[in-house]
Length: 300
Ligand SMILES: Nc1ncnc2c1ncn2[C@@H]1O[C@H](COP(=O)(O)OP(=O)(O)OP(=O)(O)O)[C@@H](O)[C@H]1O
Image (tube, rainbow, N blue to C red):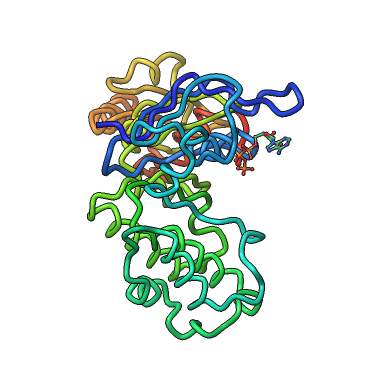
């Protein structure tokens, strides 16, 4: 059952569309990623889901509720990562956790949450005295302290060091294992590939593709990438005809083929038939990075 439903969402700033007709559904219990270049409209879209912005057109529902008309109802079931300016500089970590827990009817015990996020040693520290990564971890704790049914995380691990990033990923996996739905805006391909059940790739306010991470990779040109430099040029058309090859091109003498495992065998057979040696032959798995660049016009 869908817990977040976005239909034909449009939002413009000063006549310029930031979100230009987005439609997607987030199923209860999944981690749904929104991925896209800078300025694609990701934050605007999730702020409409949080009820912080009013759509110009279209409808948004969270557990059947309108986030603007029933803001209080949505706030009780949806946890969102705060922006830095929304916390007072003098508030300590403990006070912030206690305060936010008090807003909700059935809050989580904030102590294990703080422990999990490495904040136990910082409970007496004022917000202004935290490092960027510690602030970020506090925002994640505050998004989860209300025991939400849906949590919206925008740039979840930006500013975290590699260890804190990995710890945060496993925390999010635990959160999902408890049945919480996660809506995740991210720039990190590795994060999206590891965590997300499905990903909407957003470009210029529209959905460029919506699929599982492996579906996106397959769609964007084959899951296996074969690259090599042939000892002599291959005849035109030979590469395109290889079984399973979705994309095959000669980039300045280096051949790049996106295909399947069958394509690898076909390449080896082709080279042997023509007595061509493949220098620096590499067979790798395509990543979400490859798919992202194929699906969006600009790079992040
Ligand atoms: N309050 C605002 N007033 C005017 N323009 C805005 C406002 N907020 C966002 N925009 C513009 O809307 C477009 C989409 O912005 P948005 O922040 O939603 O994108 P994003 O995909 O989250 O980008 P990023 O990855 O850089 O955070 C951008 O062109 C941005 O400049």
